[in-house]
Length: 214
Image 1 (cartoon, one colour):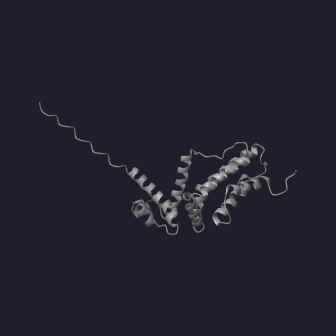
Image 2 (cartoon, helix red, strand yellow; image 1 turned 45 degrees about the vertical axis):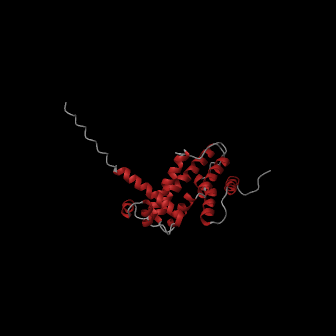
Image 3 (cartoon, one colour; image 1 turned 120 degrees about the horizontal axis):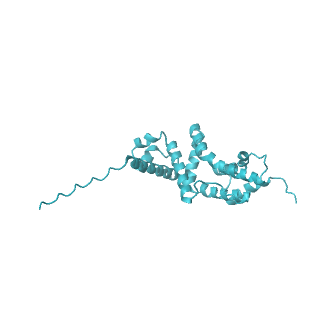
């Protein structure tokens, strides 16, 4: 009886170009974020990012035109991954029926993120770069800042519907009473940022500065 020929071994499938691209992109994100924390934005370069990620400069320039664009996309991805890990996607400011407590809670979470080096260093770098790069600044506002601010708008509108905020108040302006001071203090180091500080901002914003009726 003739020996049967064994079936030819199937060749391993070639790695997907899409998978390779995603792996490279993820490595570039991680490299950009790490370098900004370790050496600062001015000393972070495309060459440094490429070396850290284990890719060629051409790979980076195929997708981005500058280190600012790399960092912007990496930072947006970092926020998305953090939200997924926390199970907060899609995220909305909680509505417990206590507006002050809800605002204080989300601002405390913001403090936690601001003091986390993974977020602090790239956020500062993008804010600084935005002062001299209008296109980057507009992208930062449109993709990151404004969506976050709209969460406050939505919560303040539900508070209006519940009668907890005057109906004539513009929520988009009102939120700046507690968000903008925090952003300025964080960015310009004009004072410490803490839970006590943001709690006080909310109290001042909701109750005003005039003496309360006894």
